[in-house]
Length: 459
Image (cartoon, rainbow, N blue to C red; front, side, top):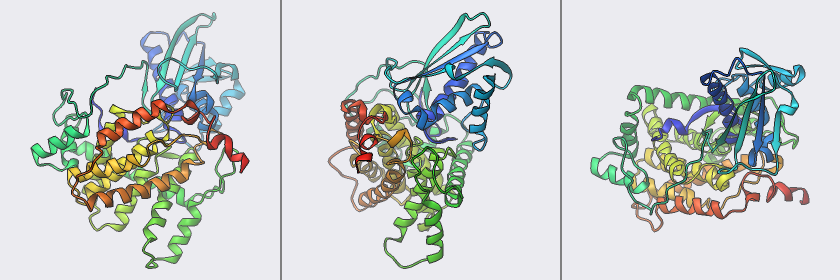
């Protein structure tokens, strides 16, 4: 089924789209499966099993808590982030829960297992839910996979390999499967990228609904930045005692005012990215864009555009998100946005590419310049590993978003100074990211068993 740009931007809860949002959605899907099979009322106990990366970094990413919250019936977009920990604590204290908030079942520590040395075939982010009746009979068991960005599937399809630029037959008007097709459609219609993508989105819903949804996404991004800049929490949870930097930086930038420093904008971009990712690390409300670990890049670049460009208004903000979403669809369709599958190049690299192309679009870039900016954004993140210390989405994740946001701005500016011509295509760069991820050892793909995750104590 064709993806919508709104699939790439979803309102959720930190700290991880694949390890927090995904398990929560999988749990609610299991409840729906039990309902559909007529087994919900007969369920007396549920077991959750996490495999691979979900187990190895599950504690730091909140996978265990998210699974329980999902079984309670909570969803990432509306769960009360202030009470989430208390709800999980209460379940363990009482050794029971209200499944979907309406049916009491037994649930204790032995009902959530993390298999550190096992994976399910097909994807490193696998999980299994099993339901028993009151007599102890195994009634239903189902496997789910969190494949990045909060997307959850119950089977892994075999990817069909194609040559770069090959058309596969468009399923909906204005659809595209790669950047070659996107540019060709722009050439044939005379439309800019954002306008063409909006026409594509019209196949899913009325334009007014798409516009309203994207502006709501932008509002949540702004709210997240505000929360990160004004938080009174000094250190982030998890045990590393990582200090929040956004509140102090926010005060300093406002106190000093405009200084004439030619790099002043860089400080603001850093602030926006730090604010979002510190909120994410604290389990706050934010937008998956396209993942939680890389959630600060697109908001930081869009805040930069709004603060420093006279072209900023609701129309250009919508164009920015449409263009970013279109580029994200290319990554999601032709490679991966899962750190557990391809490393951080699939998260921060994809977000950097999306932000670069989107900024180029709203600053007046042609479709070929937009594609060039997006290619620069991913090309210089190729090989980026995912090695979070202690399994927490904090170090190096938070600073990495600030660096990538500035890199995206630079990529857009480089592309705007050119004519759109370049040696390496976006399609080739996406393919390279995918094959690089396949070659990458598992230690560097969100397992916290290699890189900074094991070497930081030596410093």
